[in-house]
Image (cartoon, rainbow, N blue to C red):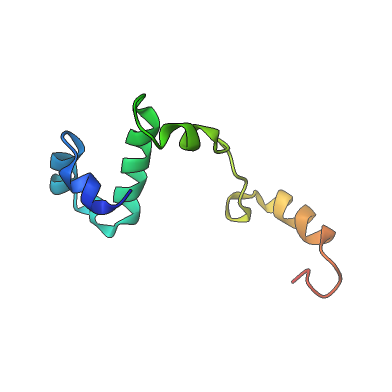
Amino acid sequence: LNIEKLRDHHWLGPIYADTPQLHDSIGGLAVLLLAEALNATSEFRPYLCSLPTLVPLPVFYSPGKLERVKLDLPPGEQG
């Protein structure tokens, strides 16, 4: 999967061309991955569908959750 595949895609290509926000490669790749996950004939679909639907990242933790996680860190790393 790469940005060239997105540009050449029969229905995503025009959307890509008209949406500059997708030109950063990350945004375009995200859209292509979603399309592949929804495509029943995609060779990538089984892998994409096996990925977890939620990956908790500290950047999205609430302030309370972040404090609880910090308390579980070894002394000196609690920052």
